Length: 95
Image 1: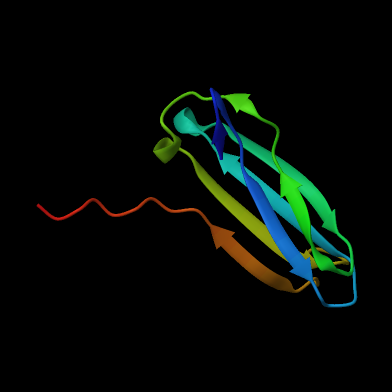
Image 2: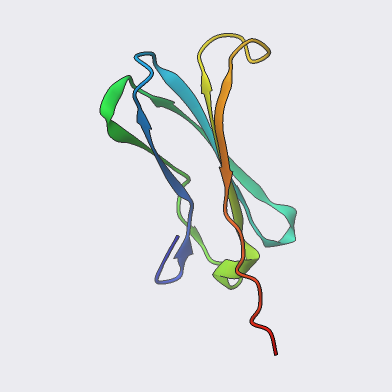
């Protein structure tokens, strides 16, 4: 996401599992820097929100990539991964 000179990532997830979930949201910036945020998504019908802090943009928004992962609670090796979603760039138009 961008607003003025700032760039950040945001994800929403409606948790209808009946159990609390954990989320990891990663924003990969130009030059190899990453920002990772861990969030908890409560067991509710309303979408939960997870977002990285805003940072001054280093390049055009197309130079950034974001990945959101949602998993059940418990030890990482035992918790089921429920969703992994990533941003992507649009393919260039054919000439």
